[in-house]
Image (cartoon, rainbow, N blue to C red; front, top):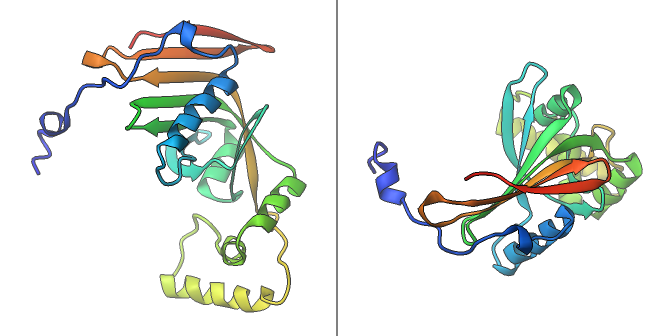
Length: 215
């Protein structure tokens, strides 16, 4: 493959749809659910995969794919290790963004907001719903730390497996959920000749203002 000619190799036009101000719901959470259901209806694996972007206290950005686990009236929930790189970044700077992308529908949903920890009770409730092996993995892994080897990690997993195989493990304090409370949304629909539709929502106290951005 010629990596200097990627635009020529992969260029295609976006022709799947359009998005007008009159098409969207007054509340962006309702609009999110409509578009998310469209993604689910495609039948692809893990439609709840989303890109979580964080920034450290000195502004260094980082992104990774995580899984959306719940949609509440107040925002979006995912779970992770609180002392992981992303957990430390959120501790230092709670401003985050979420991104959902569907190449099949030629759509993106970008959400900016503030992340806060959910209660231990909510974290433990979700933790107890996980498969036993996933519970042991969460207890075993000191996420984002440098480790000796895969073999050492698996040996530690086996040790914890033996400890907990006859009892129900509790959610560790260093593991749990975050709720991302949105302050803005952008619903992006690809259009012909890169003349895309970008319909945005911005929170103003308890109301949402809808506006369009240039592509």
